[in-house]
Amino acid sequence: METVLSGIRSTGNLHLGNYFGALKNFVKMQHENKCFFFIADYHSLTTHPTPEDIRKNAKQILIEYVAAGLDPEVSTLYFQSDVPEVLELYLFLNMNAYVGELERCTTFKEKIRQQPDNVNAGLLTYPTLMAADILIHKADKVPVGKDQEQHLEMTRLFASRFNRLYKIDYFKEPQAYNFGKNLIKIPGLDGSLKMGKSEGNAIYLIDTPEVIRKKVMRAKTDAGPTSPHQEKSQEIQNLFAIMEHVSSVETLEFFEKTYADCSIRYGDMKKQLAEDIIAFCNPIRERILELSSQDKRIEQIIHTGAEKARESARKTIAEVREIIGFRNT
Image (cartoon, rainbow, N blue to C red; front, side, top):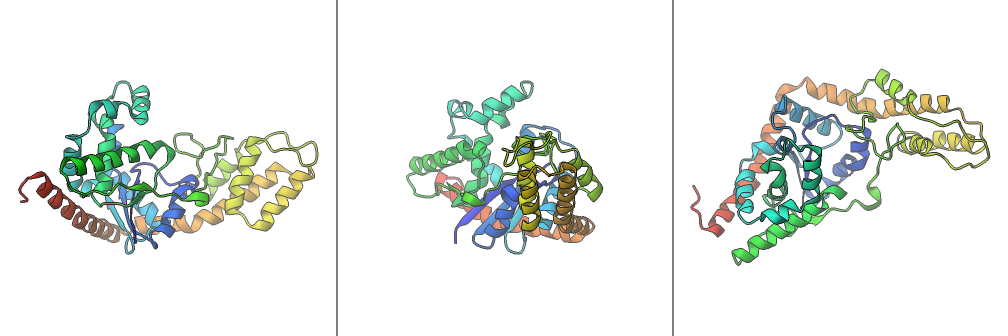
């Protein structure tokens, strides 16, 4: 059984893109591997140095992930800030990371363009903090998006550099966890190829039926097909793509047929899509609301996750301190 680690953003609610893009795979993956899932609340400080209600936001994310299928009895689910050993390893890795290689990171260049008035050291050393998150549990694999591949490469670099420096085969060089054909991208309702918070085009799992109906009915469409089997515009492709994942096969086939023979009514399609999204999201939404009222249970999940994560992290830090030559206290 391999050890797999994945970070989870600490702000914003889960939307359909998150669910089909990663979470659905996480739910399956946790039963096939030894999984660590952490809420990356330290990482949020690089962009928002004084975030409001940081603990509250992280707690809400944890609730939504548990409601959507992550099982704290099966996997280790914890807050990054509850494992101080991560910061000690972060310090050790920073001592052998070079400014030039950190400055060449694509994400660092993008961030300094996006926030020129907040180019902090945390942005520069983001790859070493990510490496510490991964190496603290000696992860074999890490699910990463395209924008994080370079950081995983740097994690392997830091791991091999540590091994060479101290002449020991200690840290593994983690590989990307590839979901292959199971990796699904849910497009936006505005005709864009990606559903996301920053794009303002997302349907959240916590949205009420009324909100979902309004969002779907506002979805962009075109004037409709004028000839049989006309190629779909991006806006219409998006509606069919979402329908493919939340609607029945019969429903999808019906609207494909009516599109092909030019009899489709987009209003009817959007009404049906909205109801199918509601039917899909409602059980998760109800679970989110139920867990949100169970403070003691959530605090117990947080406490247990922290203890499990720290048990793994303490062992690594004790061994790293011994390798470097520091006394364990």
